[in-house]
Length: 370
Image (cartoon, rainbow, N blue to C red; front, side):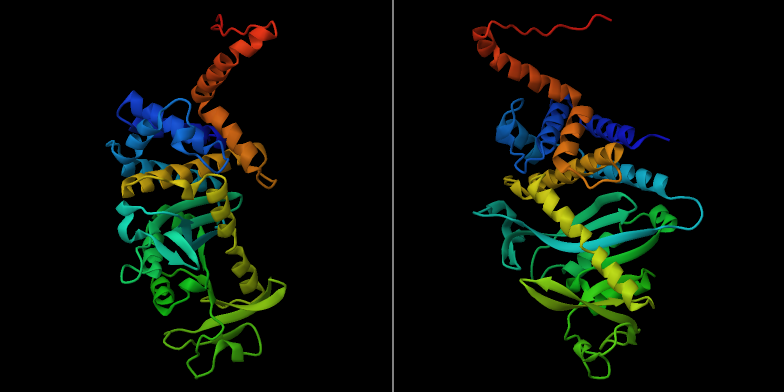
């Protein structure tokens, strides 16, 4: 069985083999190196090895197999998760779905109807499917929400859940976690048909079948029937501190569970919020400046891939400690893209040659004698 570090290295090799030319393979390594700097702004103009125009053509124009690259990444994720699944009782796999906005300013004519204002933020809304089991945290897939009148976030979330492979759903017991934006009747009914247990946030004023509302309930853990829903659910609530005040948050479960367990599971949904902050502020998910939809999607795919490689590197060095994303990303960059790091080092030494000469020093790089 390969170690997780070897698994990450093999994934990079497989991705490079998918590209048809050495020129494109160099561009892919350059972009991965920019993302793995983990400084939040992996812009093409920051590259010292490729011109911004070359990287832009790689993302927006060149014909390389994007879908095959996605399948290769998913296959690598599946292999790693299946290696974690122990024999005997199946562990719980948390499948978290949520909606986030990649904030953008300015005009992007090629995106057309993709830019929307959501929760006070203007940008590209994404519905993301995120998997959590044991120490593993991996984004599985995403879809772009195109706004009102198009496919709804709930419908996109259901499509994302349908992409989960059968070996994964058989090896683990799934729990679907989501916030109140996905607590609608169509979402609950659809997952009921798929036999997926759901724990989801719900509005405090949601109407019950008997005419009351959720805020009328006096005891958490009650089995109730929501208006328009064909089956009963269990409802609990907790208080969350926001802006110095405690707000009551309701959570429902399609399984019959105790109130404390529902609340515990409901809080686990917040794991995806940490992922959103990391993917934006460390890996620059919202920094794309491409003028085509294909370029934006490729940017996001490489950004998510860099997160996965960094996460696996962290698990290889300190699986039981909170991740230091900067340290793990820099280590991943050195281990997974050593040729890139070596080229950058040579460039830096060449630039420092005059400074070294003023200090009476000289640095030479020579091949090792084997």
